[in-house]
Length: 281
Image 1 (tube, rainbow, N blue to C red):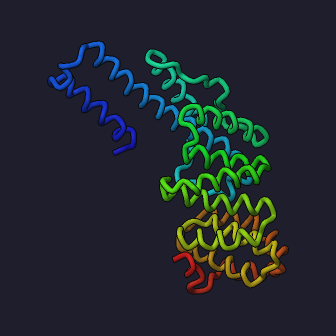
Image 2 (cartoon, rainbow, N blue to C red):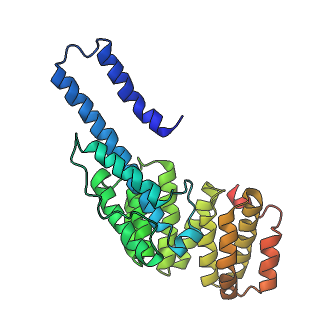
Image 3 (cartoon, rainbow, N blue to C red):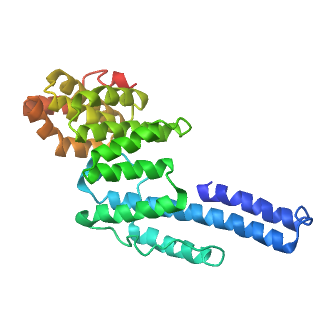
């Protein structure tokens, strides 16, 4: 069953209740107002979901984002999302004042425009649902890619202080905090954060990306080689195309920085040592 089906169930149960007599003590106007209120809430929630998906689609147009960000749910094309945004907005027009969506991208932006389009989506998402966990995560990622890593750090530390947030949101905030510190050149601070995140989520390659980048900058060859072996073991276990892309694009440059010869890198990346990913298991 889809998430949409789950969201529609309460509305269906309530409508059936009215028909079978449970709503008769209320006036027709009260019943109608109640239904409108629930439809407004459900419609705005759906609209927020679509704007959030459009934000991800814009960020995905950034080269750095697509090569080092793990997306559990790949965004659809902006054209498909745009059609649903228009339909949902029109449906809400009779019972609510829909937000102005004119600034939302309607097609996948080119890389130079992606940040500006994502910024517009994030502003609308904030109007729809405030500083929700996902809105703050996306805003922090936007800030990192917009070369505002200190702003991203502040957002993520504030988010991590919300102990009521879902565990997956807190994990992503932890991982992205290491990324924000990496972009500020605070490499020694990245290492323990990245190692802890890799232990908590052994199938997520992004903590290893952060750890390897920090190890290379710190000229920690032993730590770097250990990380490459662990990441290669993870790729062998999961068949991750994200790791393969990262190996092709970023690993050679980081290897030179860490002082690891190309032949040694190739050996580590193609033949992970047994138990190399044990820290993440």
